[in-house]
Amino acid sequence: MHLMHTYQRLPVMFQRGKGDRLWDIHQTEYIDAISGIGVTSLGHAHPVIAEQLAEQATQLIHTSNMTEIYWQSLLGEKLCALSGLDKAFICNSGCEANEVALKIARLYGLRKGITHPVVIVMENAFHGRTYATNAASSNASRQTGFEFERHIAGFIRVPFDDLAAIQQVAAEQKRVVAILVEPVQGEGGVQVFSPGYLKQLRALCDQHGWLLMLDEIQSGLGRTGQWFAYQHEQIVPDVLTLAKALGNGFPIGACLAKGETARLFSPGGYGSTFGGNPLASRVACAVLDIMQASQLAERAAEMGHVFLERLNRTTAGNRYVVDVRGLGLMVGIELAVPASHLMTQALQQEHLLINVTRDHVVRLLPCLISSEYTLDMVIAKIGRLLECLEPRQVHGRQQASLV
Image (cartoon, rainbow, N blue to C red; front, side, top):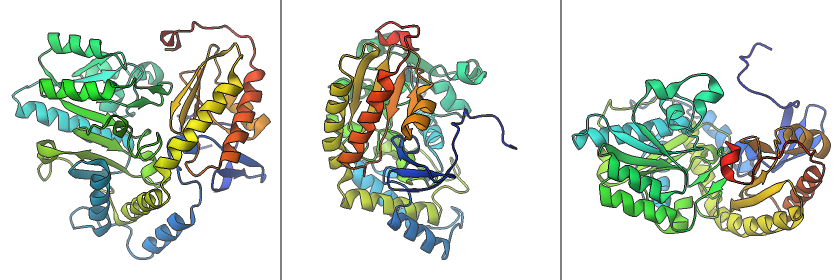
């Protein structure tokens, strides 16, 4: 295979998909309980998305951002209306959206006369694999072999969901300009914020004149039972980053900002060759329209509650299950044993596509259109997999033991 060895791929090659089902090259059917890692929320081969994509491809795919782009303008309008923010920058991916956010934070600091601005980031965070986003992520250098944190200064790391740690930084460090946080840490093991945490972060940022920057690349767009996870706490961030489900598989990302923060860039301050081209933007507009018309955020809240309750019931009594947690249809099962092998086992024994993150947490991100019957099938399959766990080395029950 003439591809760089950057992925530990599962032993399967999918040929087609429909809804929350996938078929491999041998026509074996699988349930997709990970949605391409939170991407295909509307399921595979959605007929409206396919129609919009095909029609636009026959009209105009790309022009560059040297000209006005109708679909990009419409997408920005839709995203701002849904989020409560004022301006959008449309790009190609989540890590690019986070790069834009970090540049906004640096510009914000410079405008305040802070020549070396600092951004507070979280332990167990994941924001991407570019130089800056890798540095903002936790343990990324250990995973890649690159010690990014030595080369890119300007980040202070604190435990997730720990307000006292941020208050301590505020007392000791006067160069802080922003907090960058995932409301729900996906790659970090599906860690969900405690009630009041985001609201308190908003108050802290207001108190100290910091930007609150929320990475909702995985938790946004209906996944947690609201359009955006911060809406559970009735707040609005200064900066918001999105990607994944925004294109339902077509590459696109967005960084949104509000107020004066949205006006920090001037022409030439940032740009993208492909970002927000007519094809990508039209697909994203269709995704938002379908989600809104189908009330998928509300559905994720309802189905997520049922899903979590039944998963807890199924795994109760399993001595290897430490915790079952989640918000909406973003769910993690924390285990006391290493469990990366479960991905292959689920694929081969149960014809189920799942993910294991941090080596100990089964991550489930089912399609938002999945039926209750399918979700019950997923639960049954997970139950059988966990019943067969081998008594390997058992780690401590505290979350700190997982990283």
